[in-house]
Length: 529
Image (cartoon, rainbow, N blue to C red; front, side):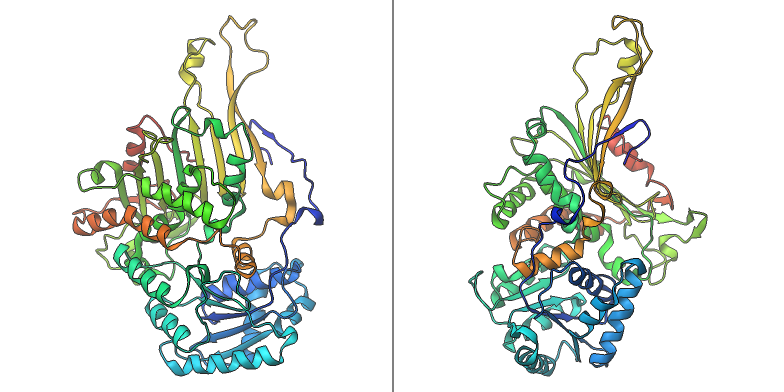
């Protein structure tokens, strides 16, 4: 892929079957609690189909759906077929694979707060493990449930005996429990949940999902840094002026008004996604690529973030809500006009935060994080901006306009990496001693162009990792606690000090002018590309 004034970089590895190194999963029964819900229909069932299509699932694999809605095996199979057909382009649908999946789909209905549901679950599991192909007794429990029923669900899973605790990560058969965000509402609730979960299951059994970590470009941050000697020597305060991490969405809150009124942008995006991107960008080299070694280094980064205080929050943070406006020719309502949103709500849908890391590598380098709904376009990226050259000898005009080098890691869409640098414009200046024209260009690498269809969506990657027991892309309990310690003071301060006039920004814009002023105070500007 190339950009205006850009250069396309072609990888030496060509697309093809041999480029994929992902392995087949262990055979297991995947129990989805909340199997009739939005997450299961939009993400989990289509991802499992794709894994089957790619040959990653064993013959003994099966899914047991559990939900409050009445139903049976036949109705669940129809639900899954409809969900998969809606999520996947017809050109990539294989009816043979769909039928293979359907034969492995089973269902029971029940209330997650009732012990009887889990007794029935245990009986159905034993039946399936006894009669299904391969006879695998490995069990994967995916809690695609609302926070309100999370606690009774994990208590009943344990008390019923269907998900026994095992402190041996290599035990066979295995039991693994998958937890979706949000993990807690604040630091105290997250600690309480961790205490509860770890009293019932071992840490090696808990897979806390952050779907951002399943994206190819996010995983490639570590390879880019530690697999290329040209970058790592520059990855520090001596050469980097600042780091921008953006997660912009062009959509509003949709039908999630009730959830968003409780969460807001900090809980929804900063505590998990953005802080994980920051940790991967700023971490030290792990001793190995093992899960615990990587997570040790990420946790050290989160623990090194300078705490926000009532004195520093006003000058280092910005909050706002989207107002009505036009996006792609469509008129959209403001946040307060959305369904299930209070007409005087002060919940932010946009935030920009400046953070500092108090450690040897990054002391004094601002990390500027922002995220918002109803922004100009959907874009998530990490931009590492380097210092300007200390001396410019190409003429006064060049010195005034010279842009700094930037390494951009695009998380979504168009996953890839771009490096921006300066070149001489052909034909300008007779000699280098004269005034000459310099222009920035980009070397641009795009995963889709380089590897075609080999880039797996996040949930496919994460589900396969769970089934093979790879924990690197999942957050550990101390990581979760450290992330909450960063954002808790900000959430508390904003709750205790609501604005008398909530700042707003137009739908379809890049956010409020206060965010521009925040980054401008350091002499920088946002990458609104």
